[in-house]
Length: 107
Length: 121
Image (cartoon, rainbow over all chains, first blue to last red):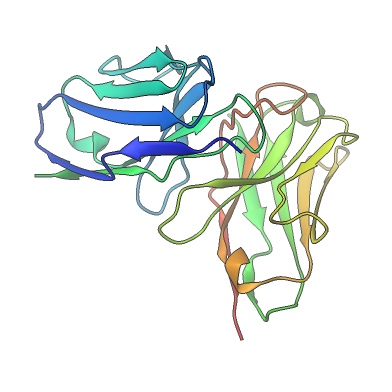
């Protein structure tokens, strides 16, 4: 199975900050990398698929990049509603493993 | 609007059984793969099982193979997960999730609100 490792596991930032979350795959997954956002008590929501394709309705301050084994999720200017936990997930091969999550907290 | 509504969770003893249901609406149900994804407390999600639009192709994670069975009734727009021989490590919120194609591709969008399964004596 492919292992997905996110860093950092938690991050404190302020409204307006630019933040970057990193995800590394244990083998090359081309661009089969997705990002989900999860708020407390809610289901995960798909933000980005294929490493950089923003889902409809997702604000343009979110962006994704990378290929192969190294990927990033960037939020250009944090808004209050962005404080949540973010998960990367590979869709290259079953069992489509998720990362352990990055919790983004208000500083 | 796509809606997915899970039910059937609860407290069960180790070795017991539960059947989860997911009522779907807002899309052509038999045109899309469906999945169950679970999330243990404080952990990342884990894809448990997937089923193709016609119900003929099924995937089960190694962690549940032989114990959990996914199925669907396209006449009722409903997805099921029969869970047998439950273990403490099966304790999690179980989400129903819609796929984006007829077969699973690893994309889950959207997810239901989830149903909590607690395995404990």
